[in-house]
Amino acid sequence: MFGFIVMDGNGVLFGTFQDNTRKVLRKFSMEMPKKQNTKSSREDAQRFTRLKLEIRQNYIENVAKSASELFITGGTPSITNLILAGSGGIKTELSKSSLFDTKLKNKVKFVDVSSGGETGFVEAIKRVGVTLTKVKISQENSLLQTFLDEIKQNRGKYCFGVADTMRGLEMGAVKTVICSEKLNIQRYVLKNLTTGNQTILYLTPKQEKNKLFFTDKESGAKLKIITRNPMMEWLAKNHNTYGATLKVLSKECRESNAQLQNYGGIGGLLRYKVDFQSLKIPEGSA
Image 1 (cartoon, one colour):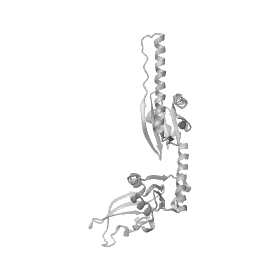
Image 2 (cartoon, one colour; image 1 turned 90 degrees about the horizontal axis):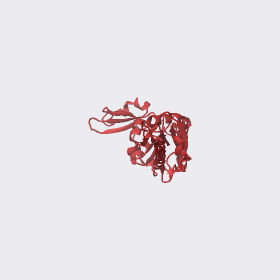
Image 3 (cartoon, rainbow, N blue to C red; image 1 turned 30 degrees about the vertical axis):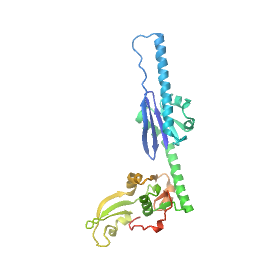
Image 4 (cartoon, one colour; image 1 turned 90 degrees about the vertical axis):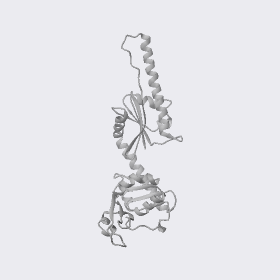
């Protein structure tokens, strides 16, 4: 996860960027005193300059304090990199401040942007796009390797394929769902209008052409399609309900995507051991 501090002479914005999602954590403004148009003495001018410096220093101190509150958890940075974005030298002042935590200083990268606030936030993300992509690919490859290592160690704390992954998810056993961006599975909710019973199936494009999946086995009645959604879309909306995180391997991770395809394009890391062989797998799951 990347942290962002976007600051200028008017205020500051703190945010994060992860998995193509930007989030604003906090923002506040800085108001400089306005110089009076009336003639002022030399002492008044010096007092005005001193006041401006005090306000600017307090601003830097507040930014440094907020950075520690937002980006350090339990004494450890919660971000991989910290982007200091802005125009002029105010971001450099922050990085040199004695109140700016050393643990964050070690993660700083500077980016010049033409605006502050959310506009500057978006601009900063674009400017570090190449770096973000490289970090994202590295993290995704590392996650997939962890998944493959679990399979190799065979401790029972993994699952793969649609059926086992969804069963594990429903049990609350899945900690992390890993999907290939190429996963092409549709989630169907079907209903028998006579009995009122509903069935959930996960079908490949080939299975969707098979009428048997849409027919009640006992009565031969045609089942009504209540909903049809791409599985990836459904997971994106519902994984939090099951206490799991969702990680999608981007197209740039070609090798990792190819490896995950060997396991059905989807898998998971489990919180505890599950014997899926002893569980009944519903027909129609991919």
